[in-house]
Image 1 (cartoon, rainbow, N blue to C red):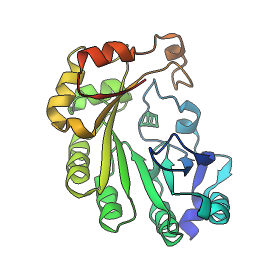
Image 2 (cartoon, protein in one colour):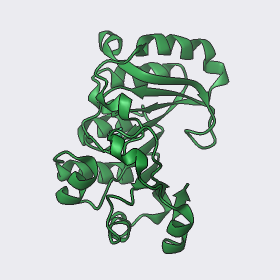
Image 3 (cartoon, rainbow, N blue to C red):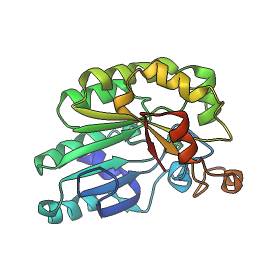
Length: 229
Ligand code: SF4
């Protein structure tokens, strides 16, 4: 419980129809991230060490409204940075609420433990770039232990009950060959979604003036892949 008390959130949606398809879900946005994607649309959340919101108070609100919810989305930031994540998910499970976990895949050990304990119903894992260290550093602006990302991809594919991989296409940072490379590396079209960069809330203010990705163009280039505008 102590670990949950230390958890801070930068945002909370009491009920969302958009963040988990087919679910009415509360959404908790935990503070802090170990990546610094300049295009990140949650820029304020990423650099916030401790947000305004106590996760413990959020749980109290979710408890009151649990019967109106199908589940809870735990997003960030990067939720696996918080030691309180496991006890938080265990508490949500006790309430009978399914959990969707958003992650950047940098903590495969924790991801595996959470999945194997049955604490996560659905994993949404970001695939920032082709799965090599140089490409990942280009999109995330930090050095990345790419072996951990590979491990997480494998764990999610082999063990998660339900999952998706998500790539946000950022025209200013991705090369033309990046999306075909990711597609080939994942080899899992049914679970790969390409999202379009939008110039809002960006961690690096320069990206606010950059052009959004064009969903129609992506659909033309990648027939058969789910594109989110
Ligand atoms: S987009 Fe990058 S910086 Fe932003 S929350 Fe996700 S991993 Fe962190």
